Image 1 (tube, rainbow, N blue to C red):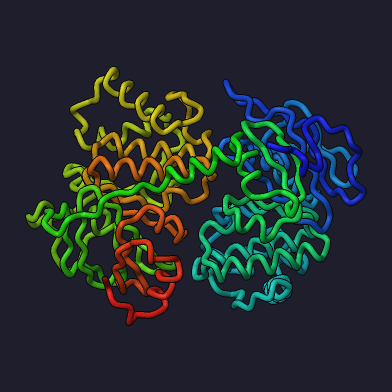
Image 2 (cartoon, one colour):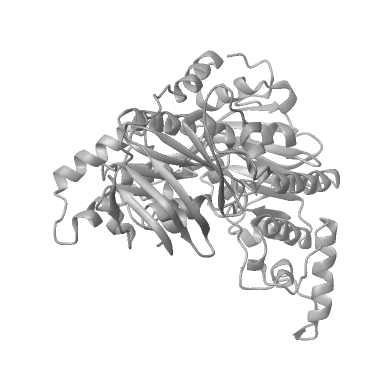
Length: 525
């Protein structure tokens, strides 16, 4: 793998460019038993979008938290506009002009738009807040982003995209020199991404230095001017985006050549024989629906088959899936398991029938951050057995070790707190939790969202292997290419209604699915 496109390599002593707003040099951070960063460099320039790339666990989040004062630096230094700084907390970083918009919007949903935008910077008249002036000021910052919303409305009444733009407007209030965008597009549809990028480019043109973190390579190449790549907590290099082919980028990220990467991508797609009409479905839904969630639908799920759910955000994909595994109770219709009617009043009732679901919201409905990897994996298995039948420690250790190896969970330490793992490794622990219950049906809701391409291909390959071994899988993803890569059938959702069911063959493309989403007259195959 060539480094000819590398504009700055490890240990490069070159002086900072004249337009550098931030220069981080030799950043080293150690947690108990783990060196999270080892001599990492980063330069952010005025009027540029700089992508920070690397697999989950590469150190991206740790580097951002070092820049924003969340983590203490063991070695190395940070300079802002040529002046050495050492932040003891996020407030100091913000005072220096560094603002961050996180993947999970870090605002107060119960407050109004104006209160969120101006929080801590309200217009005052003496000791009192001048609310009309504060709302006018908030409206002015939002108008800079071409966002026209009622600033008196509650933030929670707006989409995630609008909330993220409100977070960016808040950064404008403090006159940010640096704007850090940490996975800002993971919950947005294409139109919302386009609007966010329009705002980001405008801020870039106004001279703001922007650090962009994303696992969507298309977006990185569309938006960024330059990128820094990390691997295993170390600095790999800094590159001009247009000079670095995508396959070389991924090779730098995972430490493999382009040819090896092509092999991994090919292995992720497996040829699985579709079910025969004579086979008995594992589960059948007839007229199943829930008021306000999803219109009544019919669906059959077969052993050894992956059924993809496709549709825009809010289309009802997750709501349909939740009815299959007892996460929500249907108002109408009938579920059958092995051709026998079944009631699933709770997720535990489904779990005891070996039906499992991994939620898209791993932080709220998945991991428990204060527990270890071992304890998180054990949760569902122990729940299925009940509180009085404790899993013997030796048996649990064997199960945990098996999935740590199979899923390549890193670090491979069952006693590590899961909150200290990267997002991709947290996702793998969740998968291990449900696989440990030996499910017959596994619903995976956005299992690869916000994780790097290496972890993504590992999970895709695992899903294909599970189906090949006879498991029935429902796979939900906002990435249509991923749905088509894995699924034998694709159920298309729109406006909380099943509008099409497509048999996936060589003639089916993303355009086929998009047409089905847009056109309710598409006939189910």
